[in-house]
Image (cartoon, rainbow, N blue to C red; front, side, top):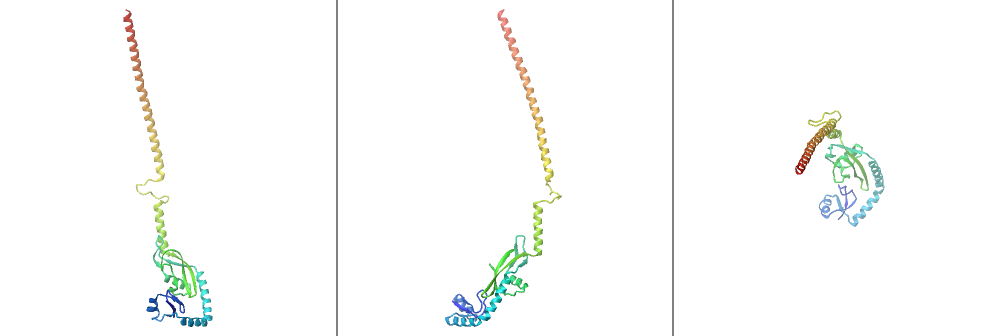
Length: 241
């Protein structure tokens, strides 16, 4: 149903604005509370006439609203709050915090005129919200959520601990049972040299043993051959006789 607002209504509209609402909301709340009237054809004509009479004054108001909107869009607002090492806030930032930040800049606006996506923000970073300064004028406000001084110190301490764990500082004693890198290489080289020096004598000994075993075998073979020749000669001599 269409209604003409008789006063500003949060999250709905401003006075003298025509809005569409659900029947139950209009009949059971807005109309009985005197916040709106039915937007009949006659009521619309009356509204149009009233707006014409107010047009001159309204123009001056709109001009001021446009100036304020431009001023808001040029602002650099930083909201400082407690932030954890992972960037999450201890709590959240709402339109109340933005309204307070604007007040610090001497700009007074109701929190209900500031629209934050999702109603609240829970991480540090850059954001943009819509600020309605007049029913016909809105501005986009850019701002940044930053960690406060205490959070910065805690985050720096946490980062320092992580760096110390991942990379020991120069001159720092190694942990118990841990061998310094500088001492590890000589040990490896010494071990390698010892293995090579042990292998060489073993190979030489094995070679000598093989040679010493081959010599007696050759001598025994030679003796057997000589004995066979002597036996054969003796047999021939006996046959001739």
